[in-house]
Image (cartoon, rainbow, N blue to C red; front, side, top):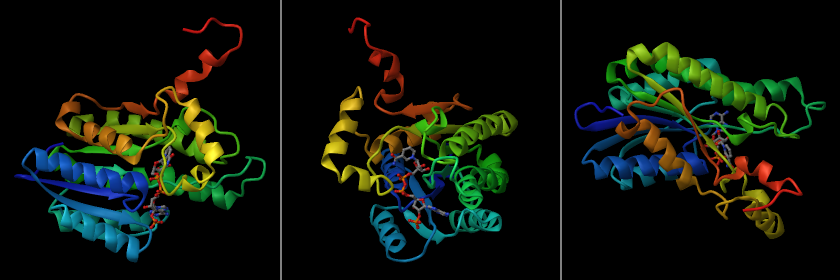
Length: 268
Ligand SMILES: NC(=O)c1ccc[n+]([C@@H]2O[C@H](COP(=O)([O-])OP(=O)(O)OC[C@H]3O[C@@H](n4cnc5c(N)ncnc54)[C@H](OP(=O)(O)O)[C@@H]3O)[C@@H](O)[C@H]2O)c1
């Protein structure tokens, strides 16, 4: 990630969630370790205590942070967010399109309204944010990372439009990477496996389910928001200067486990 002078300027959506907050904190940690300052526009859907607490935390960690709120399902709001973020930060080096939602349902029962909402937040918002940020990112030769999901690579029965929306997000980012490489803008995705965050916390409250899930992961544990945050920071950073159009799966080996579960095959 390039930086204006000595300041890294970032917009992170879904910032009050588990992965978004961890990403903001990791980007501050990384910038500090490189002797840089950070300006962060932290975006949530709502104003209120959670966004205020996050903004205060990021400022206390040494960033210059602003909390912005908007419904990413609304197209005009995506453009406004970029305007507000670039005005606050004085430009933009990185866009982290992390916000995502689920509307679980068998596809036979999913409502059209829920389908459209899931695609608007999980897929279309990344395109609209990226498009609005293109000029600023071209000026800084900046980078975009979108947070997709293992569900974008494997069908997720019962999850309604979620898998399709994340699969579309993966291809959207690969296409953006091709179209904007000449502008010096890199575009990549991170696909989390099972991560314990407010989105999934209810499931992990059930200790038996949590233990069964953990047992499925080759690396032996459920992922932490910090695991994803470090992957995002890597893809935004200079160590990934020659990486674009890539998807980094961060799942503890979960998705590749399948063939090893087939009965009757010798185990290593
Ligand atoms: N957790 C997992 O196991 C997992 C696995 C695979 C992929 N992912 C992906 O990782 C990303 C982050 O997940 P997470 O677990 O950290 O989620 P989370 O804790 O539920 O946080 C979601 C964030 O998105 C924001 N948001 C939701 N709807 C929005 C909207 N319409 N407009 C603007 N902001 C909105 C929320 O803001 P408010 O709180 O203000 O509504 C919140 O900041 C998502 O894209 C998710 O699909 C997560």
